[in-house]
Length: 394
Image 1: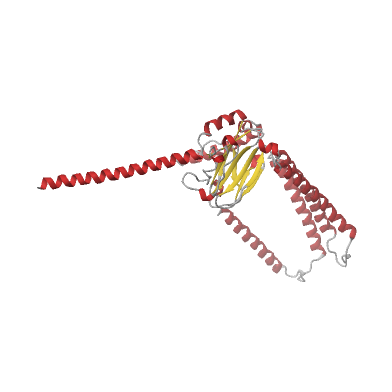
Image 2: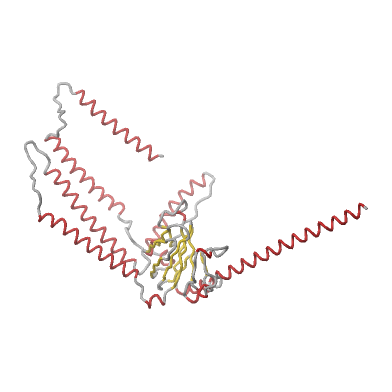
């Protein structure tokens, strides 16, 4: 609402200034005012200087941003083996864009001033220049070709998984649904069991084929644990709409498409505990908690609950606008040491999906039997009470 009011005020001020200039023109009695609607030499000169002023504004704004916000890194804290390669590609691209923008904007504004209109001067026209066309075509073509080839090379390295790597990898399924993530682990056999949405029923909300031998040791988790230094292969599915599995610190993103399985893999290089101890992360967390503390003070003053302190965690996010609670579709990622990961597996591996289904079925059966027994007892008690009442009446 505030933004809308500000925009309305700006528009009204612009209209007011425009009307004032019209009134000023009307008050110039006895002064020769040009109403030919054709720019004069003075008009062109003023516009030329204004172009230079705007160029200065662009450069001053750029310098100001560097001085005041330059400590915020464009990309940093990658936590996967391929992360630095992605970061380098981003930095190279942004550097080229910055240099090209600086040069082209300077030339654009300079030529706008130098070749401004003058009375009696005609613009030089020539139909074409092979030399100029070659220069402004070949330079962008070479730069773009280098960037594209480098990008394809990086993407191939990221997506290519050798048979040896695949054999030694940890296989995890990421299952997306509005609006949550579920991780399915392949258990001791490192092979995920078959799954299909047609098998979704009760606690088997991932649609795992319980008759598949490979599915007997599969288990689910609402928290994604992965080991440092080991390749993790993700099999990604979606139950309903198009989602996107986005793990920013691992420079990983892959669409989750209903009806098909997509893949992504990477090797984590920094545990959660190690990332929390990095100086830049410590500073970031401190800044966030400082802001939250000020907000909490306002909330407490109003009689509301204070905000909890922020603690850094890796997150799995959805990078597609998948519905009303899209912003809340996230899952905590924990990068463990190999020893911690083995301990976590030992604790959670027995909680298989098959066991959960059997337990749920047994509980449902016991509940049904209990309900039937209660119903029979109630009927029996009712009959006994009727017989007693009839006997007393006699």
